[in-house]
Image (tube, rainbow, N blue to C red; front, side, top):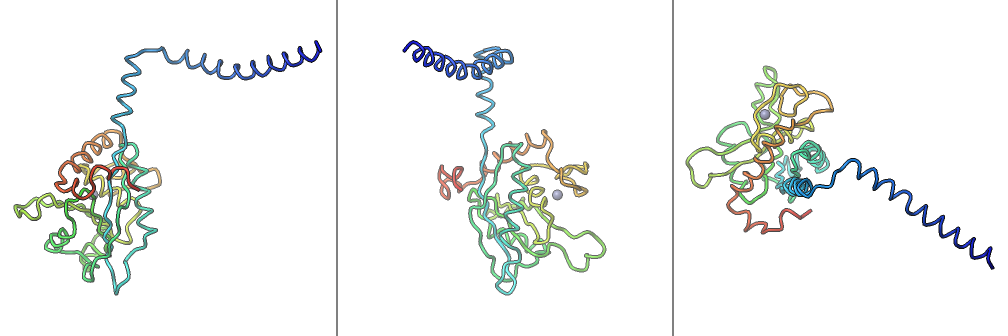
Length: 244
Ligand SMILES: [Zn+2]
């Protein structure tokens, strides 16, 4: 009987020590690193709150050629994933809200007038309008210059119906980072001269990204973009940020 009890007690003691040993040592280690401070906790909480992710829906308009889209959805998904990888530092995430096919006649957009007409498909509805076409420059320039792969367009004229119209264009054959580059412009970035920066036309390699400074600018730019969308509440209500 005694042996039974002591064995039971020893077992309990062993279980208890095994149970408390790890959490206790971790708590001790934590206690060493972080001096409890209400102020610091409050600051941390504020930082986390201000770093909440800004999620922005995309309307993807794909040009068609003889009825077929000029690029696949899989390719667009790759661009979006690549952009989100680079944007995560800024606390911004974009996601495809809808995909539409453009009528025929939009395979190539080479003139200023066409760019303005394209804006007719891009109402200020709280989404970012992304046009995927085949060609952005005139064929005769092909040999003389590098092809134009992407474009950020924002209306700055006086026609009321085009006020606040803004969109990006990516060509079907563009590199994976072109979409992220154009979003950089949309969120307020200029070009960079660093070969590892997404905002450089000289960019190379797999380690491309935005700098912390660019990320701060883009976060402000994303908030400003949403703020100048007059119809965003009508189109998406308050819940647009949580859809997927
Ligand atoms: Zn650019």
